[in-house]
Picture 1: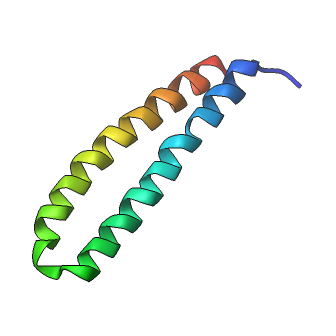
Picture 2 (picture 1 turned 45 degrees about the horizontal axis):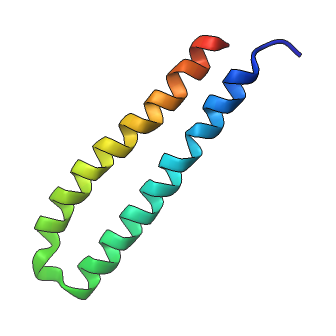
Length: 68
C-alpha cells in the first residue's frame, strides 16, 4: 500500500464537519417545524453556518488529496 498516513488523518478530519452539518440542518428543520414564521431568519443563519462548516471540511479534505 502506497500513500501517506496524513491522507488518512485529513480524511478523518472531514468527519467532524459532516456531523456538524447534520446536526445543524436537523436542528434548523426542528426549529422551523416549531415556529414556521421564523423560517426565513433561520435559513439565513443556517446558510452562513453551512459556509463556515464546509470551509473546515475543505481545509481537511484538500491537503489529504494533495498528499496522496
